[in-house]
Image 1 (tube, helix red, strand yellow):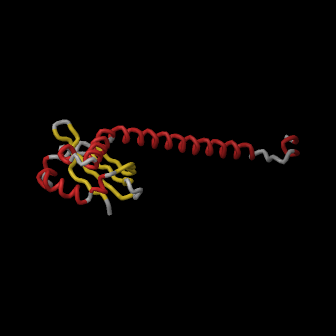
Image 2: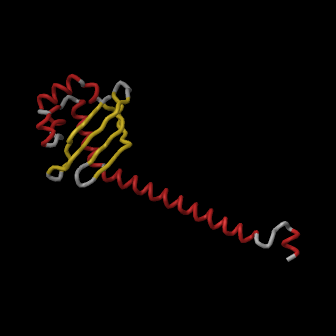
Image 3: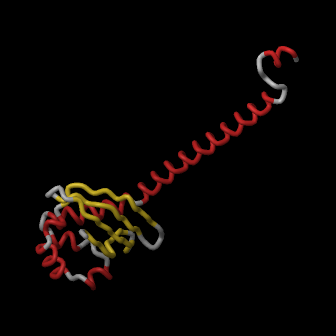
Length: 152
């Protein structure tokens, strides 16, 4: 007993340190689990939106190359009713720079039974970054564009 007192430790102090140590380990473990859960969710969402993202990539590549019929083939039936091949071709030709995309980054992704949404920025050939968003829906097992917006 006198040894503990001579080293500056009160008899109750080791218990406080032990409790503080357990609390810190518990907080660390909770933070680690939260980080792991966040990473798992990130990769699951990335994987689930991989097909819709590929449809968007194909759409932009085909429109950027001037193959408007192939790009229009990625439209869902409702979007085709709103924007015919002729009107899409005219709009794409008039705004060709918005379809010449070198990079895309989607920081907002969602997918469920109703469809998928991707939103973020695309980098144009000119180096300009512009906002872009795409809504997709499954038609006969294939992802199709339901709507899109490129630019401000």
